[in-house]
Amino acid sequence: MSESAKPVATPVPAATILIVRDGANGMEVFMVKRHHQIDFVAGALVFPGGKANKGDFDAGLSDFADGGQDWTPEMRALGAAAIREAFEESGILFAREAGCPVFITGERLAGLEHYRQPLDKGEITLIEMLRKEKLNIALDALAHFAHWITPDNMPKRFDTHFFVAAAPSGHAGRHDGHESVDSIWISPAEAIADRKKWNVIFPTKLNLMKLAKSKTVADALTAAEAEKPLTVTPWVEQDPNGLILKSSDDAGYEQTTALLREEGP
Image (cartoon, rainbow, N blue to C red; front, side, top):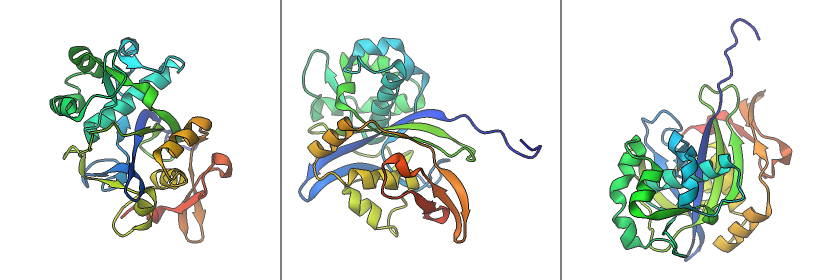
């Protein structure tokens, strides 16, 4: 390493959920638009998600979870993080009453709305909410969809696991008004197509393209459960057209390059 070279940042564990439902015109995915002043992917259209926190790694969460028994402790923590972040950012909660086989109702969900901001601020942990409300998170509703690590030349790096899950009935979804300023149920193809309206970054775009291969929620879940995601770590190269992001050809995506200028609005 040269004297001027900067040390490579350690990627922070993170998780996100592609929340999907069958709409009148095909499968839709819930997405939020990041606030323009946020310090990461400002203004971008993204899936609800974020950094895992210390509480997500609490071993006691196993007593408040359906499924995940055959997952590693790290993957259980990331599944918990994905569910917590989805609730904070979308108001959708993958949880059941303890011992109940179905998701909580929309009416029950409305009674939990006041937890969203305290969870986001770290004033309460996920396990504390679950214990108080006698709920279990539904790890068994999540299918592992993708695994991306931010390029090593970026100042902020994330080791992000993507999950896909069918939206619980009666959970409409609504952005938090803080980290995200808008939200939408949208077809994967539409989110990709209208670049003038939506700022979609490289990993989001490629995972939307991957999701678009499925026509229904059942198809998307079946495909995810049948495939073990490869770890994707893009890198930056100089191209005659400018700087480009590249990913490995064997990562399972139709597109493997993108101009960095496409990463902004």
